[in-house]
Picture 1 (tube, helix red, strand yellow):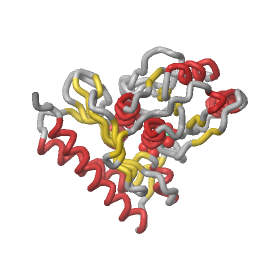
Picture 2: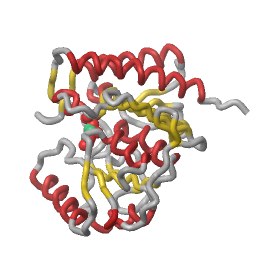
Picture 3: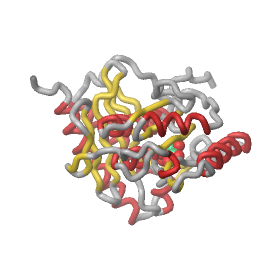
Picture 4: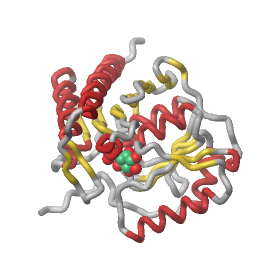
Length: 281
Ligand code: IPD
């Protein structure tokens, strides 16, 4: 039977490549930076331009599909996942890296139907690595099959995480407390490349055992989620339940042992959900 979403996936790959080339060009040139929720939550004209390119192209080719995009939500669009075929897009994942020329920036395009992820495309555009996964068909990087690490012992592992963009002292304390506990297990090392989507692809590639973060958004992790599971990994909430895409909390790991060990060490907190009703102004 032909794959009903192959056409959409091919289109996502083509769009990610085009967007990546726009991002690479913009890194060489001057960029306009503004702030969103705080002085460390950055957005550039390129984020907006790339998202516009993707939305317009998707709307033209798939007029019945829905769309959740980081910059559209920042501009006031709702962020609710329905049963519709839905594109979940972060036009520039790693905006802070992009602004500083730190060489990890990704275009992240996830696609869900009936609230279940069908495919994910993450283009780490400075490295020119195209990560793709279609549900039930495996995960790939530039055409090579991906497989998570088979390490079961967290003390032999590298764990990735990020500081995110919340600078409230209480939240930062919890982030550091979790990191301290995990680091002192001990583990081999802690990493984080500044883009959630790429961190998840590194789990899928087998070079880090797990990635966890509280404070990410659905567009940071939707595509990576399919890539991790198709590479043989698992997804979990930071308190051990199933991953809830809208909850802004994630553990992506090579296996349950590692994920559950991380759960034990995390000082969990609950950010405002992505699908929380918008407060009237
Ligand atoms: C951010 C990156 C970062 C993570 C933040 C995300 P953005 O996405 O993925 O690694 O720590 O939580 O919001 O803002 O660059 O698209």
